[in-house]
Image 1 (tube, one colour):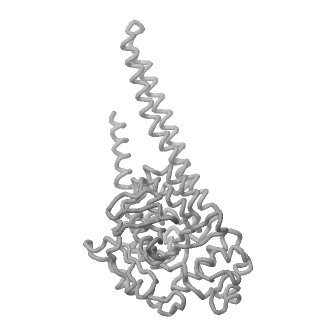
Image 2: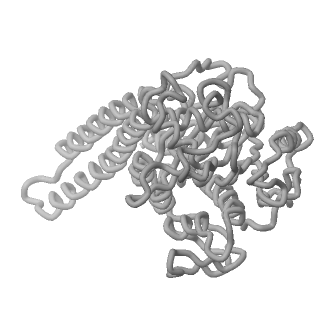
Image 3: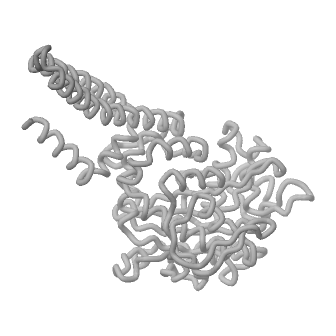
Length: 416
């Protein structure tokens, strides 16, 4: 009994005080395989002890009620041992499978002492991809760079509208083809930023040496990095439909809808104003709808949604919904984050959650999307990421990221 009490206390301590470290182990396949084997051994040994104890102390054959009660107790104790260990072993298997599925082949120089290679900030391109049977290819209608301070986790979201025109291309074959900015694929193409991804996939010669499925992210990272004037190191792309499944897997997301949002091609849906928990479909429309609004209002809501998900996806929630979340993630997410970086990324994500997330959207009237001032955009990014801008805001102000076009990174009242 003493050993059992100590074991239960240890498990509760790990799940509460060391939940972040537990998630770090959950993204390391070697640890997961070892954990599954250890759990199986513990379950078998513990069950054997229970059965052997029952054999030693079971009532005599004449005492049928007592024998039945003792047998029922032994079976119940075995179930109490086997059920949680089987569940934990299942989680270990699912985690291992997810990591191998998402990050297989993603290699990169990751040093254990400093996984961020001495950089003060690491920049992730977050892409929302929209595709449909009647619209071939992938359109990157949502493009946000999350610039994260590797020491503190302070994060600034830099949003670029999908309809930026004549975007300067990175040096090399892409710039040689579009020396005066991206103009699209033929006369029928408007030449917007959200076409760069698919153009690279359709034209291997502009990203030589990069395989199918990776040309689009590679060129888009370089293009967006050039626009903002910062190196974009990694990307993560989520399919819109898969995003809704991921939100459902964690039980929805609680957010404040400031104004009623009409959605659907034929206005078939409405999100009333107020604070509520949105389902996956509702969260998708919250961040996607342009009915009675425009791209720029939608961009502001997308930043609010990212902020809400980041704050509500705590380790315990993720562990409780891990199976369903993993299934949805495998269908919805693609990324080039190296597998060896995952433990450090889990720890960084916890720091992000503990800090205010700020935002700066490059939308009118701050910029003209048809004739953008690229030097002005880079100046604003530098201003937003300066040490003064990175100073954490007071707790009373740290609730909401901005969608404001005034210029410097501020905190906005458009998010709940």
